[in-house]
View 1 (cartoon, rainbow over the protein chains, first blue to last red):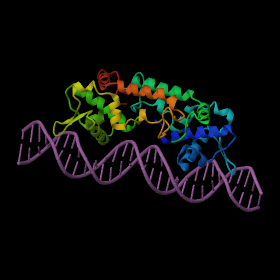
View 2 (tube, helix red, strand yellow):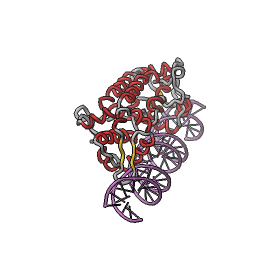
View 3 (cartoon, chains in turn yellow, orange, blue, green):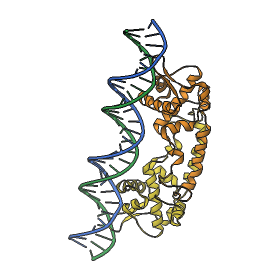
View 4 (cartoon, rainbow over the protein chains, first blue to last red):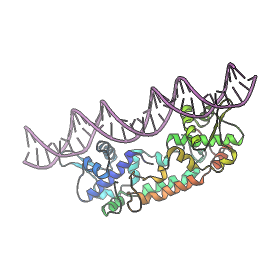
Length: 144
Length: 144
DNA sequence: ATCAATTAAGACAAAAATATCCTAATTGAT
DNA sequence: ATCAATTAGGATATTTTTGTCTTAATTGAT
């Protein structure tokens, strides 16, 4: 469904959020450990999230990644997915046609419509906040 | 969502079905032309569909690929996707956890549930027949 | 001012997905 | 029996994704 990069990006953002609530910055090393991902690759993905103003970085000693508390509630899953995988997941044609719409639909256009809309709605209405709070309270898990 | 291989596989199966209704066998060359896909790669994917008894091949002169008319109605999209991409699309965890279920859910487990079930239902309840008939009647398109 | 810890960035490597090519085997028509 | 058309299968090539490594730049602490 999502690329590995996107999976790591989502999990990284969630972990950073949980730590930001505690006032802690985190390093790629800690993130990779916590979400069970390759460290250097994760660092690359963090750069993309920084470019898209989803996470914020502080260079130098005692630096690391963080998300200002007040922003966590306003960040939606869709923004993270968009920053890493783009919007093809809910905009592109299910069968890869360049042109696919009501007037010129691919064979599964109508069938896919509901699935895509469900996905789009879910991504646009799920906030980083709720995901992070569930992790903090042990209701969900970032690895294994 | 699907791999390129899977997209080609679905479109190829639909085209073969439309031709099988007319009693025609088709070659990879004709298929590739009709669905706008790389010929040799498409031929590879057809082999997978043959192995899974979804399409049938006849070697030699006047040979080609076909699907017995009476089978077209019983082939579901899910079988084609399964033959090529496997079942991770609606069985695997959205964030790639090895273990992800009600007792040990990933952060998006519940959110994804509906999307995955919608997708699963759609794939399992869409027959090759309806897709092929829509192509034949010009209601949907295999390329451009 | 120096040092150690850190992010940024780009080059490089490995693996997987996508795509091509060549040869062998099969088969209907002549 | 031969030929031409066709699928099967394996080797190879290309592209994309995933992953690693190295160096430069930044920065707080001392």
